[in-house]
Amino acid sequence: MWRRNSRQAAVSRRRNNQETLTGLNVQLRKVDISDGKSKVYFTKEITPESLIKIYNALGTDLKGKVGVKISTGEPGGHNYLHPELIGDLVHKLNGTIIECCTAYGGQRQDPKLHWKAIEDHGFKAMAPCDIMDEFGEMDIPVEDGFHLDKDIVGDSKDTQWEDSAAH
Image (cartoon, rainbow, N blue to C red):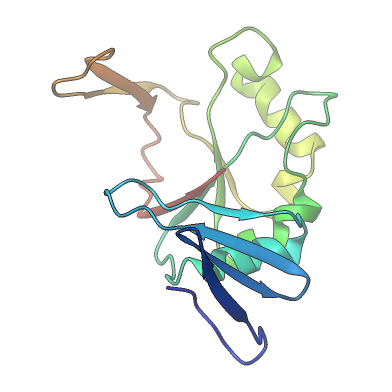
């Protein structure tokens, strides 16, 4: 189900078990999967406006404490979703950027250096941020897991997320 309003003036059509939404020079394609798997949305236009449109296409509003899980990028690198791109969506969600230290070597493995990367890349000025495993981690049991018997997650005591938007 696509969320429509008068500003979007959307046109939809069905083809090969896919529904397409066009408008505002953005085309979203929702793949209809009736076997209980996740729905996948695609767009060719990656702009702040198209990210809002993708979120609106979900037809739900995230409420409460919303964590936006992204990679804040390696120091000196450019392979991350820049604040100029995601800022409008994060503000719409009243979200907090949530991140974890890396399991591999590098500056984001250390929380102090990770915070510097978060600040240098502009995330701290854009929205509240939280490194979920800054002060520890906890195990969540995985019942009947094929490869895992537990999931190790950040033990951030003051940020128990009600909803999250992840990349």
